[in-house]
Image 1 (cartoon, helix red, strand yellow):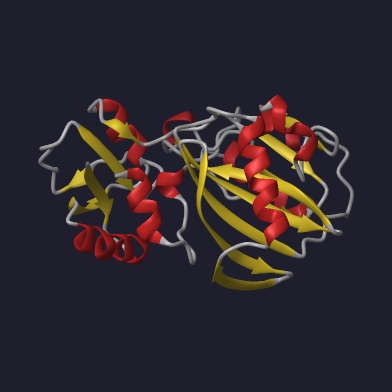
Image 2 (cartoon, helix red, strand yellow):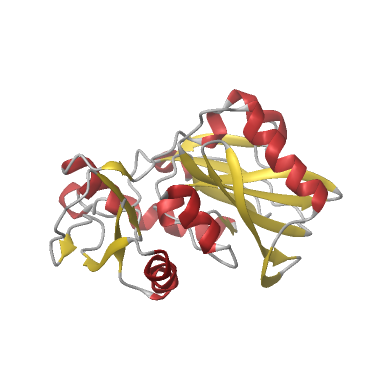
Length: 255
């Protein structure tokens, strides 16, 4: 396996693990949004995996790299998971960004993010003024001003109701197996710690098992809210923060 890494702090940790494992890798700067690499990598292995910006998927596609970047279907549309989603069809709506301004939004807070795993914006909580400002900013652009990977008028968004979350964990799945986990938030406090509560670990395994083959490798974020376990979202494994994951285990699973 050959590893192509965007050069920044998170992937420097991965590079150290790859060094110890004797894996072939190179570090590159990435042109924002388009995913071009500087310097151009020398591909010497038929199996190549990339880590860094989500825009690397464009380079992987253009050069036919395998596995390259594992792109994901929108988790919101995965039928097997719908009843387990914290923000699912039962409490969210899908709407094009250009239509958000016409909704009868009130003064409450809203959870908002793109339906696609596009990284145009991360899932976040906004009030109505922030939502309307976002819509106005996008709609005020000319078509030639839209940047690849940024919000557009026809970006499908999900809009839901914020909830209280006690803990959030990131889980790395490879070949439908849970490889490593990291706590990354406890209540409102950002807290990175390797591992996951026992019942949450079993929940993750159950979620993977009930939707096999979702992707060759992906990240599954789960949470505890009001004492119940839920799926928060999925993320592209190639572009997700490592937090306190065991990178030795992750490299071993992917190599």
